[in-house]
Length: 238
Image (cartoon, rainbow, N blue to C red; front, side, top):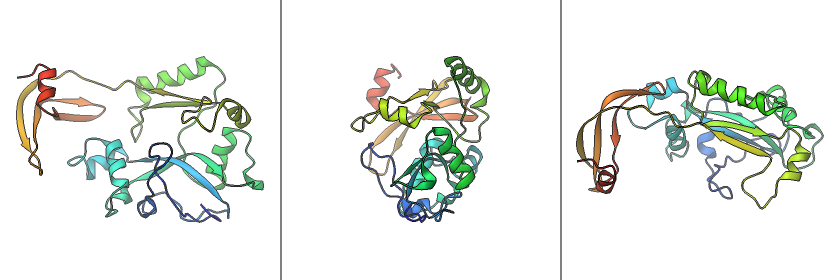
């Protein structure tokens, strides 16, 4: 944002360089093209597609909500971006500004919500490892499944921004002041009932597993790509 106006929207990319998808981001449901303050800043967030919206509009053409959000946000046509949302988790000032002299992560989140009126990721203030484990277990044991969108883990950050600067190096892509805790992928056992061969647009032949329907994370799966014949040999199928 420059002087409060949205001027670019860049994907994470490889951590150094991303793609400008401004043409699509402006169509997303809760994105503000003009902030209530004339500030120069960058907002960082996650593009999401809610589970019910995915089922209604995209379940026949894409594998899951996360893949769909990624693919739709980069479409040249812009089609479908009106179904996406952005949840913010950080704000970075481009220069010294009186109303953005943050000292803690908590101050940043409150600024995003109360001052800019933006939706943010669910956050908790914790003081001990036991607090983190308790929250982790609450998500692992049911809270995660009941969220309206998919998440693949939790991130723990050092509260003090000065401490973050002490721990982190600008040359490193993985900051030491925050740790990501990923959930194990949910899995279920089912039966392989048949293998079909699918011919793609370029003539590539791909084996497709026909499965006894099984529910995983609220979705029923009855087919799965087996990639290629080498994968069939590796799995000792057929």
